[in-house]
Every structure is written in C-alpha cells, then in structure tokens.
Amino acid sequence: MTIDAGSLTDVAGIRVGHYERSNRSWSTGTTVILADHPVTAGVDVRGGGPGTRETDALSPMNLVEHIDAICLTGGSAFGLRAADGVVDELADRGRGFSVGTEPHQVVPVVPSAVIFDLGRGGHFRHHPDADFGRRATKKASQTERRRGSIGAGTGAVAGGLSGGIGMASGTLVLNDEHGEPTRVTVAALCVVNARGSLINPLTGRPWEAHPGIKTPNANDRRGLANHLDDIETASLNTTIGVVATDARLDRSEATRLAMSTHDGLSRAIRPVHTLADGDTMFAMSTGAVDLGVTERTIALSRLSALAADVTALACVDAVIHATPMATVPSYTSLCPSALR
Image (tube, rainbow, N blue to C red; front, side, top):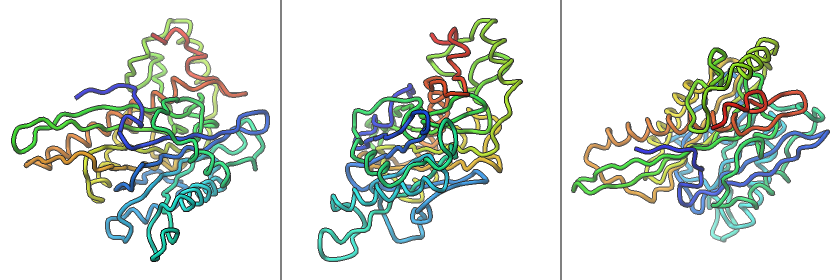
C-alpha cells in the first residue's frame, strides 16, 4: 500500500472544479466533483450541525442507483443554492436520472454539503448561488490538483488557523481469486473548516503526519502557541469531503467506505464531530476495477483502512496549503520553518 499527497483526480474518471470569490467583501466558494460516467455513491453524516441536500437519495434502500456529481460549498444553508447550478448544467448536458422517453427528460441528483463561512472576510449575505455551482461544474477537470484556500475552502477556518481544501491518494494491491494482482486507487478531497485543531500545540506539528512538514523551530512554536492561546474558537464550523475509488462497490459498500473516512477525520482533527460541526463525508465508486477476490470482506476492510488514511492526510494537506485571511493567520505563516 502506498499513500501520498496526490489528488482526487488520481481516480480515473473523476474531475474536480472550483469557483470562488475572494476580495474585501467576498470570501467563499464552491467545489464540484464530477464523474465522467454515473457512479455509485454513499454518505455518512456525523456532525451535530449538518447542512446537506439529497443525502437521503444515497440510501441503499432508495430508488436512485447512481449519481453524476457532488457539490461542496461555502455559505451555510444559503450556499445550498450552488447545487441548483450544478443540476442545471448537468440537465443541459442530458445527464441525470431518466424520468421520460426523451433524452432531455432527466433529473440530476446532486448530493451536496456546506460549510459555515458566513461573514469571514466579507459581507454576511455574500454566499454561493447557482452561478457558483454552474461555473465550478464547467471548470471541472481531470488535471485539477490545486489545494488550499480555493473553491469551497476559500473562507474556511480550522482551530483558529486558515483552513481550506486538501487532497491525498493511495493505491492498494489485492490478489484476485487466481492470485493475480489487482491495483485499486483510493483518494480523498476534504474541505477543512473544523472547530477542532489539526495542530498539536506541544510540538507545533499536525496531529497526523504529513510528508511536507517537519517540527518547526522553537521561535515558531512559541508564536504558534501564543496564537492558539489567544484565539476564541468559532462556534459554527464543519468538515466535508469526498473519498473516491475505482473499485467496483455497491451502494451499501460505498456507504461503509464513507463511514470509514470519519476515522481519518478523528485522527487529524481534535475534537471532531462536535455539536457545532456538520461533518459530512461522501464516497464515490467508478466501478472501473472489479475486485474479483474470494475474500471480499478482507478486501473491503483494507479499502476502508486506506480511505481513513487518505482522509486524514487530506485534512492536514488543507491546512498546510492554506493562505492567511484578513484576520486569521495560516499555519505556514506562523511556522514557516515547518516546511521541508
């Protein structure tokens, strides 16, 4: 098994698009995860204050078997309007759940989740709308590898430091029933806007190790500790994200994969899943790789463990690539010596 700070787009057939506004009166954005073809999906909501749309559609007991996209956005409940733009853009492309005999008679199902970023660096009522969702969908690309304070992570704050978008990917080699190796990819994208902290105040390093970070020098550690002592943690937050794989999973298995990502959140963020967080994680399966193994339970357990690993790394990746906001420093602005 190998893991690195790769991209969600390391899973073939998955595209990522961002659109944001960041100036004196705006600090928010939207991120769309678009599949080239309909995919199986699942979701698990653990936080006490979630803002979501169409999550019930992902239940294995319900009708819709596949989805085309997931929308992650700022703006709290207002920001759910961004999903309207994703739905409209997909409908214009003839993508969605067929409800008639004509090609245009489709209803796109776009599960969505929001973070609370209202008023951060901008006007309280400046939040994503349908235009954000449509623009992010149009920008979706297989080559998108940026992270940090972009898209849905533009106005994110995590434990008193700038949050943002982070990604990581990993590969797993499983032997099929004939002993032949099967290579599976699992990747995560997280929008980190947590009430809890990702940084150990004693060491100045993230709770979860990241290959780009070393222990900062004593001066940087003191500056970080002083800042963390002085801050008042925001009361409304949320970490949301997606884990994707090319392994062929059914909806129940995709739901289990989404559940396992919360183990990664708990390793990277302390505390997590508080009453004030709306932590929501989705899973997407493109189905390109048939696991073809006799011990499917073992294979799924290993996939779940890898999903937790890449989620934890993606969370840290978000914070170390974030840039300072008007009143909120970033981790690397306080601890530049931590960069390898």
